[in-house]
Length: 305
Image (cartoon, rainbow, N blue to C red; front, top):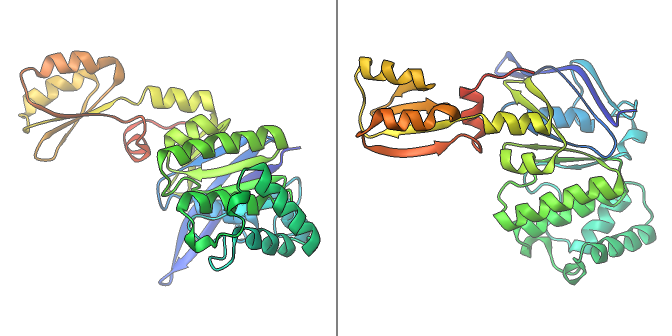
């Protein structure tokens, strides 16, 4: 049985008297022990999707199931651990250990069991030296590490992480990639993480989906994501605008011209060197790979499920 199953789920919100469709008939499944990366730019519908999976929001149509159960069911809630984007997952005026105990009790643990489990998690993940440190005195990275431990207190079968790398430096992102992979592999937990960070999702997840304007526009295994990224091409910016005939000649190398005070080209990977030869002796301002820029990829590549 899939740990998470989403089937043709849609959700509308009413804003200023008008209905806005924020999630539009999306479907995907996550198996036990699998890490699924849901990619999308801000406002794409990622957070609404995970709120429906977490049981915090009810879909207007379609079904969401956690091991075959409705997410809003109190029994199902014990199967889910959730970390929402931002700093809403911890109490800042409590210490690290006090947070673990508090949220463990909220999930139905006794105080004694929560203290024992919290201390064990602190030691297991080499965090015990910070057990008496107030959350408000922790770095962003430390807070995120603690938030994951809080989510693991009641030993969930599904862990949902909303933008877990937001505001983190590169070493801390590296830690989270390894940490999340170890949890899935060693504890058999299914992990759904939302992000706009292509590189992080690419090296952490087993499968992925890309959501754009509420629709799931791409869905598959990581090999497909990596192939999409690898074929993404480059943005090349020249110092000046080009005449129409010049621009048209260059389009044969896979480029799409965008005149924005400069000649701004999107060039396919296979034609990059031919393109650069063709524009000589023009002054090149910048050459940028689209591989780690999700917004550029969504705007400028063909998307197919």
